[in-house]
Image (cartoon, rainbow, N blue to C red; front, top):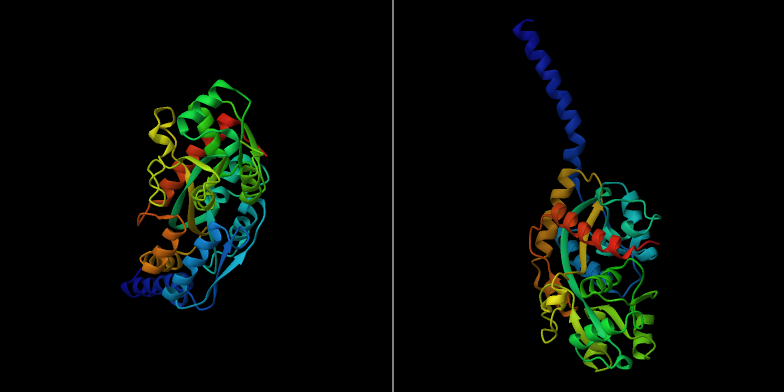
Length: 326
C-alpha cells in the first residue's frame, strides 16, 4: 500500500470515528435543553418528597432548566423506581429514591423485577436515623427496661413499622436478632396509622423515621428508646444510639436518599449531572432545609458502587434472618 493510500485510509477511518462519537458528544454539548423530571415514588409530603424537592430547586439553578417533581406512589416506592428504570437513558428522567425502593424491595418481593444494576447512581444526598419508641401502655421508659421486659416475656409484645420490607421493619428485626428477643411485627400502611395506634395505646412499640416520630417524642406522648444509626443524631443528641448498648452494638441502619438515573446514562450527561449535583449539595439553603427536616447530608464523593453493595449485603442478612417475603 502506498503512502498516499495509507493516508487516505486513515482519513476515512478518522471521519468514521468522528461520526460515531458525534452523537455522544452532542448529547453532552446540548444537555440539558428541556425540563428534567425527578420521579418520587411516594405521595407529596414525606421525607423522600421533601428531599427530592429541595434538591430539584438547586439542580434547576445549576443546570439552567426547570427540574420538576412527579410523584408516582405505590408499592413502597417501587412503581416510581420502575418508571425510571424503564425511561430513556437521556438524563431527562431521574429518581430521588430511598433505600426501600432502591435496595430493599427486590430482596423481599418477587414482584419487583429491577436490580441495582438497572440504575446509574449519581450521588448520595442524605440520611436520617430511625428511632425505636415505646407507648405509654408499655410502661417502658428506658432501653434497658425494654430489653429486660421483652426478653422475659417472649411473644407477649409487638412492634409496628410502616410496612413489610421497609427500613423500619428491618431495624426492628435487627433489634430482635441482636437482643435475642421474640416480638411480633405489625406492618402498617405508612407511619400515620402506626402513630395513631401507638398514641392510642393499641400497640406497645414502634419504629419511626426520626423526623416523623420527633413531634410525638417531644410532646411526651411517646418515649424514645434509641436511634438506629451508629452515632447519635444531631437533631436529638440527648437520646442514645441503640448501638451504645453492648447487646445491640451491631445496629446501624437508617433511611438514605440518593439521586439515580436509568442504566447506561451517556458519560457526558452523567458528568454534567454529577457536577451539578456536587454544586447543589454545597448550597447553604439546601443544607439548612435538609438538616431542619432531621437529615444528615452525605459526605461528598461517596463511592456509590461500594456503598450500595455494602448496604445491600447488610439488608440481605436481616431479610434472611427474619425470613421476610411478600
